[in-house]
Length: 379
View 1 (cartoon, rainbow, N blue to C red):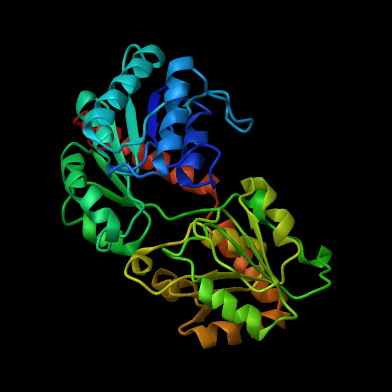
View 2 (cartoon, rainbow, N blue to C red; view 1 turned 90 degrees about the vertical axis):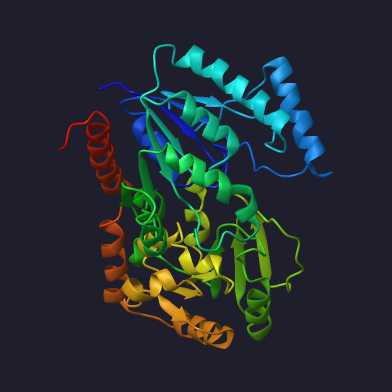
């Protein structure tokens, strides 16, 4: 069945690959997908926003929007045409721009709307398509919004009132949303094996290398922990791959690569002895299931984790779980000396059971059941 599905994404198509990229790519195999890139959060304009606003205005005026090379053919991408959602005037302009493209790409109807941040513009679009299946894929710990609370908490309540299906990836979120919504489904993260699976008999490393890949932001990434690890082990090479949100001076044995394409991460993984998730201890991390969980397991490499309670219950047999900075360093030392082929096979077995192929099949079943419920037919 060829459906028309609108994705209101919290990130650009070329940003770090996330679950909405996977789901959009999956749907594009059999359906037509309109992927709207990140329009930001509702807040006051700051000096750093001026250049971004100007670039998007030029895109609107001159209809400029480059298409990424890794975009599936059946996805229509609205790239940088929208203004940052910083005030009610921009909200109105954004809504009009989106409606224009929707009428062009989906002239008859929209079958489903997927969103993962409850912005005001997203809420306006949800209201305009009451017959579409409206899906909220929650990505944040709802009990610890922090700075996002004032931006999204009120709008989320409104958005949930017109949402048909809520998808969550953590147990904390599932517990929270089942109390306030009638249809909540648990759908954890997953992995693309072709991008992360390692054959360990072919690995030959010449130095001790500790690798982190993902966002590098003081909001969740513990720079001091990495610095302490680097100082303790100046003979180690510590590599950080991902967009750097906050400037920080690391010791010389720490290399910051910056953002790379998702499919290029394997080049750095092949040179690593140990992977790590050096997260801060805060309320937000209490309800996070890292997107890289099964990606790390697919490599088979030892991974040292700190401050991720969601992983302690079911994954302590395959991850090194630290409860203090000192223990983190100690476990990294232990992991560097690991030589357990059976343990690596166990990690990859768990990854094999959580591929995006499997997860998308699960999502298809959830979607079809929700479609039937919306039409008043029980599966």
